Length: 290
Image 1 (cartoon, rainbow, N blue to C red):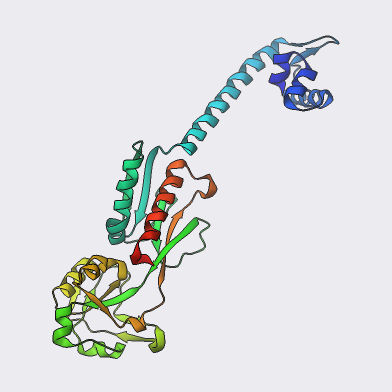
Image 2: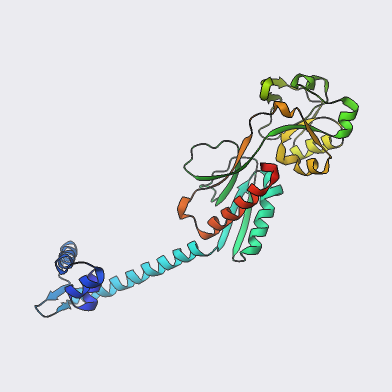
């Protein structure tokens, strides 16, 4: 307000530009002078002139306001056009199989964005580790982040057609006691396999083979050696090819939701907003997550 008065040399003209009455403008400038402790303007019945202190203050204020305008423009530019580094996290297999192809396709569309994929089998602290977007499997805690559901997956038991031809197909969970089991010792796995449906129960399996990764357990099952339990997306290619097939689907547990999560809410930058729109569309269109 002070700068407008100084530029127009009139309380009335400044008021018209700021859509305020001249008395209101006068009160605001007088309050500013009281706070600073010096007179900034000399008032006469015909004009308003800067004092010596006012002239110095006017120059400083102009520089500050210019800086604010530049900051606003820079922020608006970041909000309006996808630029900068985009960091996305997901679990290792899900990230490699599904998030990475989405990221590379997105980067082809937006050449001014650089991508960083953090694919780890642990819960990443989005804020502390500078994550823009996370793809999370499972029920979410009330974190206050913005989450968009894109689908669901479930735990499945699978084996190869050759294995089932040789050993038969289990029809109830207790049948697993007479089958060869391959178990993964990776994160979030258990030897107590829980079931839903009409036969809600927990069956403790006794594996003959332990593998430290899901990929290895899946490979053993695909070779016809035994049965393993994994998340449905992890064997999507093998199910499509017929290399593996699932059993005991009538006893599946409740499905696990998949969410795209980000911490910035409606103030998210253009790179985040555009990537989320792109990723949500791709993931929702994937038949493995329906």
